[in-house]
Length: 453
Image 1 (tube, one colour):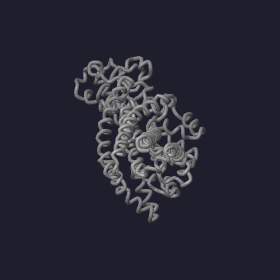
Image 2 (cartoon, rainbow, N blue to C red):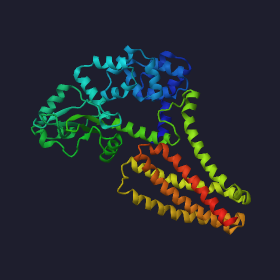
Image 3 (cartoon, one colour):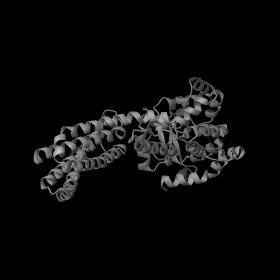
Image 4 (cartoon, rainbow, N blue to C red):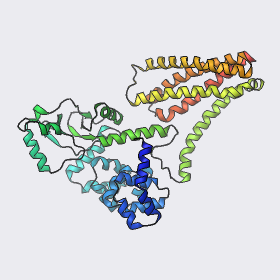
């Protein structure tokens, strides 16, 4: 189901809540809000444009649901709520959360809350949380949860069954048990389906699956998401450099990673953050967008400066002013196609130093073919429109040149930015637009000066 349709259904589901809020039926609002999933509560709060309404709804959320709801809110609103909450409430709110969720929230918490929370934990839980906190949040170690059931290789399946019955319940999304040796080094996994269908007298060692390797805790979250996608995983083990089992990553965390990266790529093309609040105050939004508009102004001025070099040429041949935007636009579209393809390939790990030269050649070839095709079409149109065969030749050559440069830039820019540690999705479009505009104008007007004046 498309996201837009899902959101529409969610809005319809929340319709009674909206009506109760409008009618100021507080008792109904409390009942309705606390019947929602924390993710739906977060969606409801983010959909309300009035900050006062948001605060009222937040204050009606039960303490048991506030912790998980915080993890679903965007950074802007989450920080507002955390800053307004008393220390005691923050401690109670986070105490029952999973370790990976607590690790996500702790950087936003006041220092005093972090200290109280860590001190109030049992030593085992504190060590597990500190293990998650020791890794960057965008790595497997930062994503992992430590609620992992581990068993040894030298026991029988019957012993495993007795152990699970003793525990009484198992963590959510558990589809496999992690197998370790006596030292705690990861060995493989025992699928619950195998546990239930094999002879209880069989040993874990004889039934376990050793194909699933442990994911290094330092692995980037993008690579982890790609592994889950390739192997259709629900959970996966996380290990340290020595191979000791640290925890597991679950599919719900990977869904969050994929969603966040998709939003980041989409929003960054406009210089925005995926955590920006749609209903943030006017001056806050203006300040955030001003920098990006300033950068684009500089690139536009550069393109205008190139046009200014050929002012006399344009005055003598007015048709150039009519056709000039077409050259830049065609280059921009062609470059954007290549840029999008390359950024996607980089995100999926399909592009490397071994094959990017092949991609450059391929994209140049594609652009050359399309350049010849549309240069011919545009040359014919321009020739008849302005009754000038020379002008037709000029715009045709300019189109081919700009499409070739656009294809080359579409590959080189994101690769270069990535090597420099910059975000290709954020800065790639600006650089590409500048290059295609400058080259397009320069090629078209330069050729016009040589051949028409």
